[in-house]
Length: 231
Image (cartoon, rainbow, N blue to C red; front, side, top):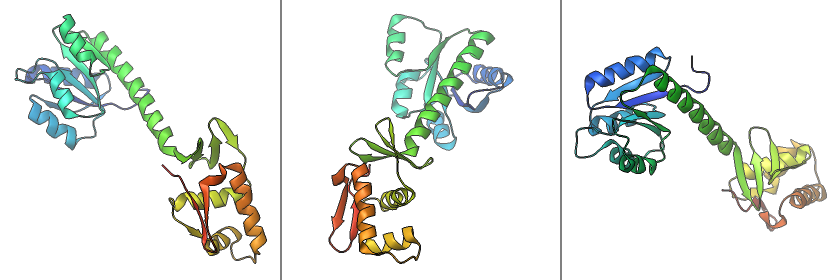
């Protein structure tokens, strides 16, 4: 039923009956509730134990710490939706400071719950795609990025064309993570046992340097080369 991203929801609600009813309502809409917590200790325990990507947090937990302060103390990047019977300005202002996905004002109807979970599902998927994209890109400095999944070198938003051997050399340098790659390793990896002279190797290194920031490739005399900046 969820066409965007699978939600693994942790409910934090101090009233067990309310939490169970909310769990049933959420599951009837096709979403997954990993567990419900009735106090802050349980919330912290379940957050560590399960793969949670959304918290439904009651603001009034009947404890010294309210739901907003509890969420702050969790120090997590898991998104939160607040459940509250209070819509006063102070509560809303305090909640806003934690950047929630939204609010459900008690008592809420099924349509309100369905709408906010659909929004949460969409936003969660968008966040996952953004993280996936950032993990594919390797920052090699000076505005250059390498897309490891697509074998593509980018300068800012422009693709840099590389020959097969230039690409192989760049990938070898990236894999070395800033360490020197010996000339013998380069020859063996790129020419695969073929006889190669020093001039061919120098030309290949020169060509790759010309397509990057020149100083990003450093030479160690008679030993090898390295890619200077990898974040």
